Amino acid sequence: MADSDFVSEAATHIIAAGGKRFRPTLVFVCSRFGGDVDEEELIKAALVMELTHVASLYHDDVMDDATVRRGTPSANVMWGNHVAILVGDWLFTRASTTVNELGRDFVDLQAATFTRLVQGQIAETVGPREGDDPLEHHLRVIADKTGSLIAASARFGGMVASAPGEVLDALSAFGEELGAVFQLSDDLIDITSTTTGKTPGIDLREGVPTLPTLMLAASDDPADEALKARIAGDLTSDEALADTLAELRAHPVMERARAEVRRRAESARRHLDILPEGEAKDLLLQYCDDLVDRTA
Image 1 (tube, one colour):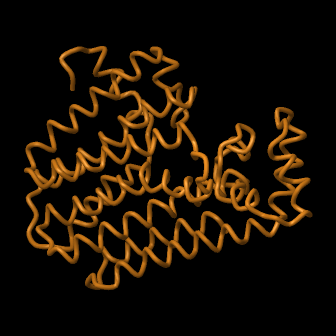
Image 2: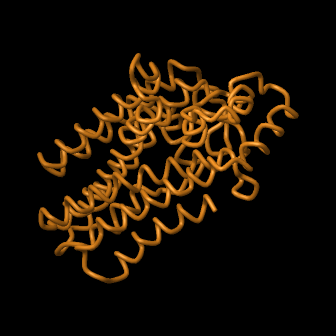
């Protein structure tokens, strides 16, 4: 909590709205691949990852001019952009203070992760440069903005448990791939969603690049030109959006995108081969299955 009641209220606004708490949960699960664990250190490691993630959401909402986060008005709507940015900064400082109590190795990883988060946000903001492949650019943004923090969460758990280096490396590699699967599955859900609770077509309407649309844009098949033009055109009306979604859902590019998600999930699974069998490993494997199932 902050010294100021207002800062405490604003800083807990997104946290109180709910969320999956996936990253701290991953810290706890991955702490089971080593030796004895100090419970206080484990809680601090999980807290650092969650505070870092939540802080990035405050900044993301300002960058995206978002109005809703987790079903409640976003902080920038509640208190304005300046306050939202400063509260995000405050949360980052709380994460930094806490990680300092865990030791130099944790501080170094947290700093490297924060660097990648900012780098990914910059890359997303400026877009691909001349000569860049747009799909590769999208994948790099995902790696830095999503994969880095999920990888750090997995590695933090192993570090708290003093897991050997090869296990830490496996957990990091798993987290990187899982982060890609997580975001790429969201890319598909923006188009396919009917039962997930996410309104379909939000990214499509706003022109946000996603895996299926980038794959389609790279197509040189003349038969795809009309759909590409519709996607690049005015999707303001609900009718235009619904028609474009229907055509995109029926297009073969969707299966190609699903295949890429399955491929990345399988890559994540392979990184777990060296880990001992048991409930913790089963949970990590289940994460992969659940993310693939979201895109079915």
